[in-house]
Amino acid sequence: MLSTVCAVGNEPPNVLLISIDDLNDWVGCLGGNTQASTPNIDRLAERGVLFSNAHCQAPICNPSRTSLMLGLRPSTTGIYVNQPWFRLTKRNVNRTTMSQYFGEHGYKTMTAGKIYHASRVDKASFQLVGPRPGQRLSIDECLIPDIGSSSKLWDFGPQVYDEQKFGDSVTASWAINQITEKHSKPFFLAAGFYRPHVPFYAPQRFFDSHPLGSVHTPEVKQSDCDDLPSAALKLTDNSGPPSHDWFVQHNQWKPAVQAYLASVSFTDTQVGRLLDALDQSSHADNTIIVLFSDHGFHLGEKERWAKQSLWERSTRVPLIISVPNGLQGKVCERPVELLSIYPTLLKLCGLPVRDDLEGVSLQPLLENADAAWEHVALTTYQRNNHAVRSQHYRYIRYADGSEEFYDHRVDPHEWNNLATQPGNAPLLKEHADRLPQSNASEARVSIKKSGQP
Image 1 (cartoon, rainbow, N blue to C red):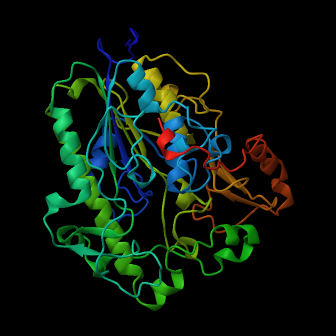
Image 2 (tube, rainbow, N blue to C red):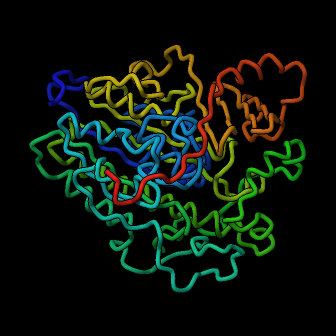
């Protein structure tokens, strides 16, 4: 049965959940890169609250999305990397996902695109499933054949085929069809956009809007890694993407940045299509919109590419929540987590609160963006490696006990590791006290696929 309590209007509100893959703070309203062009994400920020200090729970797809949908930390689920699928593990098989819970309380649940890693379908999570293009592309011939990676996903460049056939465009079109329909129940619609995940493919016009001659690369300090513990270098030594040296030596750094920017603009266009459809529909005044990215992305910073680090570039993500008749055009600088989306939506939609979720509802910050906030954001990558992000600081501790510590008020690039300075010991302890008290063993496949819910 639907809850009789509703935080928005007289009818239970709909939910439009917009997921974007690998989008860092290269978004106009976040100011991470002045070259970024995202007018539609920016206008969504103007109609809601932009959380400018939001962080993912894992800097890699599977554990981040699993954490968000289950409302639990990787240190609880034991899902630390891209395998296994949570429904195949004894520890997590019967857990209730966010959309599943909405479905159990009277909502029509729908999805298209990429919500779970590899665009997997969880039958318990969604009642209606649309197209899921985009995860593993059929690439006959890479545009850059000698890219220095064993994965065909590492490629970039403009595409000339029909724009409507791009996977994210197909996802948006299907979602628009659902938005424009009348529904007998409130709906929970999750649309997952794949770009700017590699390969960085987008229609030619988006490359034209970011001319290569005007593209500038991220600022990199050559000695940046000199003060890092060996555990940091080992953890981020990812064999998937090409090395930073490859991009530099082959003069591909600027083209890759251009392709990322083009991919971001392309996805922003799809977000705009959703917003336009919603504004023109009968659901315009009764739909909560949540937009987020599953993690950030390095484009040369710290001489790294992709994600899979515990630094700001990998953990900081866009997060915007727009509530009908709620705050508009506000920026919240408090440290928050994607983990909070689940309990926040329960509160906003008046569904029974669950006491087994590890996230904290953001409702107080949606009512007052400057409200007092004692919480931090915690990110985990592989077992026993964690980052704690507070209002001004980042603290990282690795499984071997080594540490990093940065003051973002004076060092937004995280170039100066302050962990060894004696005067910072009290601050290090304060942040270390926020680490998980226990770290679950790595989850293993223990259930046959035929036994999935």
